[in-house]
Structures are given as C-alpha cells and as structure tokens.
Image (cartoon, rainbow, N blue to C red; front, side, top):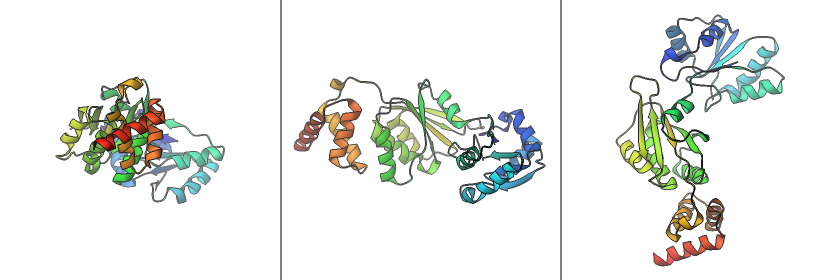
Length: 276
C-alpha cells in the first residue's frame, strides 16, 4: 500500500495514514528518521518492522518487499512528503507487485503538484507533471526545448539552489513573458506563492530562494502561424541549437510545432544570419 504523507503541515495527514502506520507488518520509508519524527508528531507508533526504501537501495530491496507481500504481509510504503512514486521511490515496487499479481492500493494524501497547480492562478483543466529538470545546463535546456510548445500548464519540482538558473532557462526557452508561479514551503509557516512573467520570477529568484519549491508554468498560447514573424522563428531555432540540436533538426521541430513549412523556417534562419 502506498500512503501519502503531509507536504508540510502534519495536520493534513489523513486519518487512514495513522491506522495503516499502526497496523502494517512492514513500513518501508524513504527516510526512517523523518518517519520517526512524523509518527511522533502524529502520536502513532508502528508495530511492524520499519525498513529504509530510498533511491540507493530500492532496486535491491524491492524483491524482499515483494516476497513479504507474497507471504501475506501488509506492506506500507511512505516517502518524505507527498505521494510515493511521484518523483519519489515507489514505482519499482508497484511495478514488481503488479507483475506478481499482488493487489496495490493507496491512502490518498497531500500533493505538492496539485496544491501548487491550484494556487498558481494558471489554467488547471489540462496539465502535465515534468518532475525535476536535469541538473546540467545543456541537458536542462534540451529538456525545456522539447516542451516549449506544450499547450498544457506544466508543473516542475526544483531545488532551492538551482531555482534561479532554472527560471532563467525557462524564460529563455519559453519566452520571458510566459506566466508562471513559484510555490515555496506549501502548507508551512512561511508559505509563499510568487506569480508573474518568467523573466520577473528569474530576477526575483536571483537573490536566493529557500525551502521546498514547485514551479508552475503556463502552456504555450495558441497562435495562428502568421503571428510568428521571421525573428521569432529564428529565435526558436536558436534556442534549440543552443540546447544541442542540429540546425536541420531544430528547423524541422519548430516547423512541426507551429504547423509551418520547413522552408519558411529555414528562410527565417538564413535571413536572421544575414542580418547579423
């Protein structure tokens, strides 16, 4: 069983979480020390065996937990905050349990993804969750280039020491005017939601941002092909080239994104090069 845990305020813990923590035969936790603090705050004491289950040992520990499940044990998986498997350990165990014909269920709980999305002020009818972006600048730029034309609202996780450069990279890839929201310390004492164009958010973050962070970015606005002039077409190709794509591939991708002939995008690139 997967169980969602509070993303900040322990008062958000669902009642079933306490019941399952007390009754599970095995509690697999991303961080056993954080689990201990949580159970103390909730006033519940696990009676089953507590084991660690994190990125470094989940491959090795998954077969052990599946065997426990096969033997009839009630196994509860919790992570540090939010729902297991969502940018946290859990997928491997669910996949292995399903393959073994074992029933998997969940205790719903708080979600930083949905909380940030709801507070962002951006469209919520359709969205994508992109998780953490790559740490290296080039890899990050390439990843952002692949979603630059995504029409749905996008949700990202990011570490505080990387948020400034990530927002700057988003402004470069999506355009500085693209609306976004930086949600930090959700449900905690110093909760803050900063909304605005990506360029402004990047400038704000340059002074340093602390806490757990979720970023929400508006999807690409719909636009008729004629709204994109040669300069904009050349800029989009340049962003993809800087991210590591070959010019031919970048031109094809931009043309496909905007529904334009590749020749039109190619001519825009040539014109920009000659003008420079």
